Length: 274
Image (tube, rainbow, N blue to C red; front, side):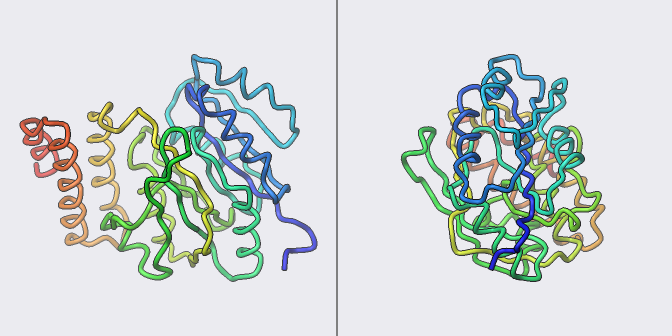
């Protein structure tokens, strides 16, 4: 059963030039069946109408922080630093939450001795009308190695709900705009946090027209930062780094083949096998 005193959930939402979708994202929070939440929106130096759209919402549970553009990691960290909730989760400004997303996960955390909980992620087209794929967590143990080895049955967006006390001082790596979510989860799970999942869809991810291929240099830098950072995690072995390099190269090769730019793949190969 739910606690007699509902626990506050902090939802951290970074937003940069998100005018197209942010209204829908915020409305999905307002429609939650669990109402004891705070939404922390970090406007990361938007140059479009993002801020004016946010300001149309007058709910006192919505807190807006404006900063100069510093990237998604800095924005999320700002939200983590000021969050008041017992539980913390994340929502990107172009995604939405199913209406029972918070309630389902809060109920689980209230009634189980675990540090974080996850659920199904529905991947949909830009209109959110067509489901392209659904990820349902299939493991409650061995999560660290599966993240480290980039298991293709995992969804790496940071949409877990986590006890704030379990996060402690772990933060997203400043400057990383790709793969920062993978590194954050690895650092969390490396602390041997207990993890479970619920049998319900808790997050709806929008596949927008802006793909990683449009910022290939940023993606390559993100993978490179990830490879450099994991060596600082005690549980990571040399074999683990080799497996991750292999998985990254498979992903990159697939993207370059689909785009017809296979010749450029050799340049990327040299980056990861220097």
